[in-house]
Length: 182
Image 1 (cartoon, one colour):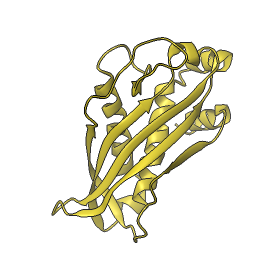
Image 2 (image 1 turned 60 degrees about the vertical axis):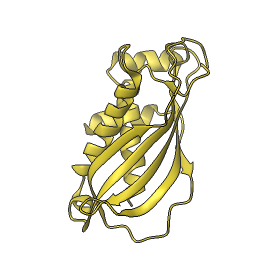
Image 3 (image 1 turned 90 degrees about the vertical axis):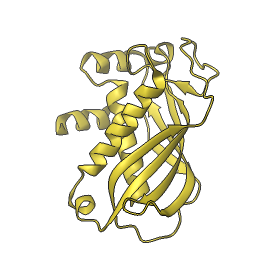
Image 4 (image 1 turned 90 degrees about the horizontal axis):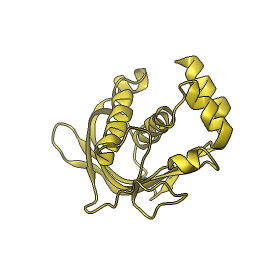
């Protein structure tokens, strides 16, 4: 795994950027125990292989299928990794549930993956609740997470070595969710 992460870092075309609504200034001692995933109603999903489809959801990291379910699986895996995280997470005092509402997940089409590359634009709302009582600890706020992605020959070579967009996006979401708990 360390070798894979090193390869990912070495091949990254640029920085990962997160922004959005300001986080409340509270002391966090959170241990994530669950993720509740939902989406805004009526998100538009595109399977078009254009440079920039006009849609809310564009994802090509899995075979054709239910793209929302595939994205939910990415968030679920990222949350699981945070639940299984290091001692700082396992020894935290406040057991919390993270509510995630997907607003936008605009990844790269195959056309952009194998030509110019681009940016994964992932937008979601997040709220933090007490796992025991359900009480809201941190009200919903918007998170905007952008991940630069390789393209062209670099993308093709990395995919041949098993370093896929899905692997990279999952790692990115793991970090983004962890940042919401710190």
